[in-house]
Length: 115
Length: 115
Image 1: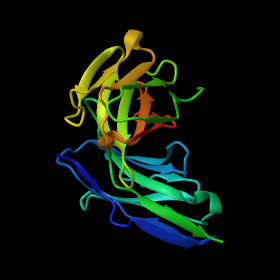
Image 2: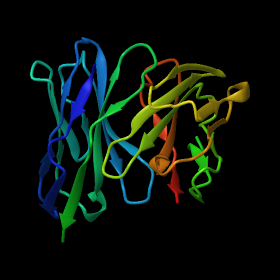
Image 3: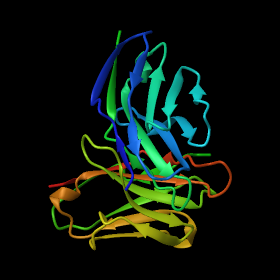
């Protein structure tokens, strides 16, 4: 069975600094997708960034980038120039590239941004 | 896209009562998912619809839970004889079936409290 592990329950970062959130996963599949979602307090979950497993190039979306290490089954999120609005729960998610495409989520990392 | 909507946003009920939640997916998204998120945890998959067909149910979905998606549009999730352990956030998500669209779009959730 596939699993997703986020080992950092909480992280803090100073405004304008860089922070990295960790995620590891376990799967026997070769084709899959990985995501980072952001869930602000009392607001809905929104996609931050996604990565296709068949792509070697790490995904980047403005201040957000990932370090995808397929062999190590690691998928970390780097947030550069952190802003107060980045404060939220961040969830790492995995889905197979076939079938139902249901997500398997990690337990989340709460990111605090200090002014 | 107008986004995924869920109603009600909050529900307080007494143990043993029945509750029903509604999800309106993004129009033309034929895949719809229900997840349950308890405090401090990531969302867990409950069930999946492709159009009006319910194609997968998690073992988390006990006999007291039933979901429907008549006509492949909105979906309802009913919990009969609620228990305190049912207290959670119930999330709905939708996605397209075709194309490079593995991203699920989430609604704001329905927070259920069973007293």
